[in-house]
Length: 159
Image (cartoon, rainbow, N blue to C red; front, side):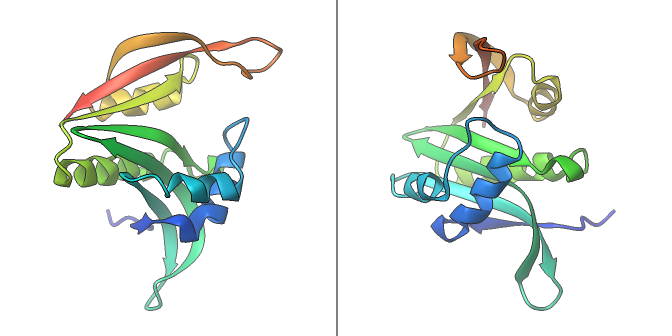
């Protein structure tokens, strides 16, 4: 089955789009300026999943993104989100595949991410993409709701 979306490299020019996607799934979210400043650090890269206007390479609907940062032979997935209305359609998997392929091209040997312990759908997606639990950060998400902090699970994938 052919995907009905494309995954494209993204830079600061997509900061506002990424900020909107972040706001739909993460609190506290990042402003467009904060997303744009992320790209100022060397080693930063990102991908955007979107529907594309046929023949024009113009984005018609942003669907998700992944923000990454390489440091030596390691890479962190700093943030990733898929719009709630289009989850479970392979978009997250495609974003992870693009990020890991780019990381491998850059000489990365391991990719890390953090995810809320209670986020079972995301944890299942990451596990299916060969990430494994390697650590826990107690109280990492201070604004998890109801004034209660939530632990983060650190996951790693070897490339």
